Image (cartoon, rainbow, N blue to C red; front, side, top):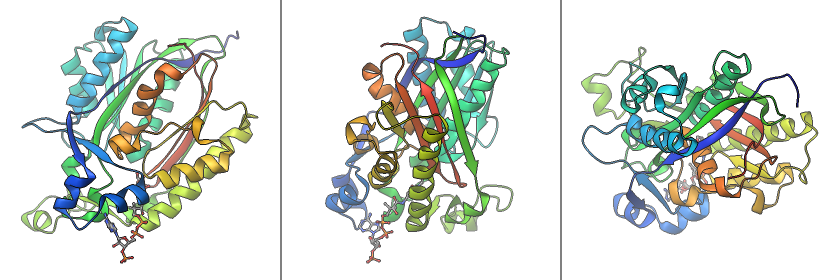
Length: 332
Ligand code: UT7
């Protein structure tokens, strides 16, 4: 016990659309094989959100509903909702606003965080500050992306990797030594050339030409991103361990961004962690961008114990990356 207020995760929710796009399905769309995708990325299948008028908010809403039900709270009790996404429902207003409206969080304010695959992590740290300061007692952080809305399904370099999904956590205050203990966050805008969406922003607004040139899809130089991701995710994870006197023995779980199994393995190796301590669901969902971290927590929640030392780690477009150290606050 201390007087310091910490932000603890007290509930987790997640949502995956029903439609499955398997590696075999992709073999029919582009020149690829199940074997190539599996060995190079670790992905077997991913989920796709279908349905006219369905967007990122619809997945986030389901995740938030689950979380509220689990914790036994009414959405009207949420004071702040932060949504990490790069596939907002609209350029504006923020998807957070739409989620609040659809879920009935009528007393909340909210905003979106654009940090690609680190969007949930950046939102989590931001949200924790509103708890630690005493400003709010119930903050929801959502990470979700409908990546299928910005993927070119004739580009084998990107279409095999991404999927749709969303996850959410509730943050509440505690004066016990649990919750979000530390974080290291980084951005490097010079990396934007390797992973971005060329048009649709103020530099290059949508025209017939930008659409014809497929400039509203994800552009990625995979190998370059891979090199930065491996180095930075591994380094920042090791750095947060050293800073907090954590060792491979007293870290219970690594919660890594699910971009490529080879990046996850390299990060775990650098931290000295065996594979049984690494959360992994990339095989089922692919890379859901801001959705990966909360969806890992959602899938593994039952295995988490109060007091577990957990390291979240992510790397994404921007570049953005970082690590968060959490002491898990409850037994499921
Ligand atoms: O989450 C946000 C951050 N993003 C990441 O962290 C992604 C990081 N990058 C990666 O995960 C990997 O770079 C990819 C999975 C995107 C690609 O894997 P890679 O091992 O780096 O492949 P590569 O781009 O170096 O391509 C190797 C070969 C090339 O053929 P050649 O030139 O050697 O004949 C590609 O054309 O594999 C080819 N290739 C494919 N072959 C079959 C590329 N994509 C495919 C494919 N199926 N889908």
